[in-house]
Length: 187
Image 1 (cartoon, one colour):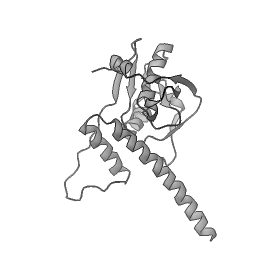
Image 2 (cartoon, rainbow, N blue to C red):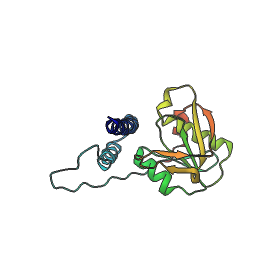
Image 3 (cartoon, rainbow, N blue to C red):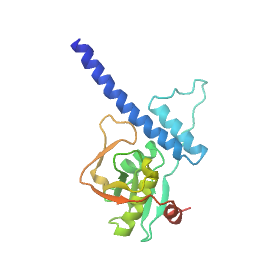
Image 4 (cartoon, rainbow, N blue to C red):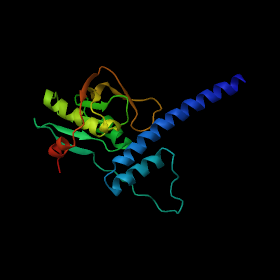
């Protein structure tokens, strides 16, 4: 009975972790803008073992898209991940330690990176608005968004793609703004 309790407790924890991850994938699917976005999500699910690899002998081509690119009114580059795999790549590989990282607080959403150093207050507000817009809270009036330097963000031990832990952060309340996103988007 003790062994069963230990094993079941561990399985429940794993199930809850998988549920949170799959909820974030569902959010990505809802935000997908193209067939390539869906292909990248499918690839992520295959890599994490939720979908089977092709069994017809054909090798699947890896699909890697670039994150969304925005430019603040002050001229700083802002990058927004479209899915968990992009969030990981953007935050843990592409971003410099001195860049700034933003994410909607306690809800699924995109990782947002402000590249190029210390942002001014307007750039911070614009990036936070993007983090709110590309999160599950996009329909809410105001969304709390956490921000910190990239050096304070770490991959969650044993975590699925996109799952991180962070320290030394501050929180800002913003409204998601689609018009602002269109204005700042780099084509």
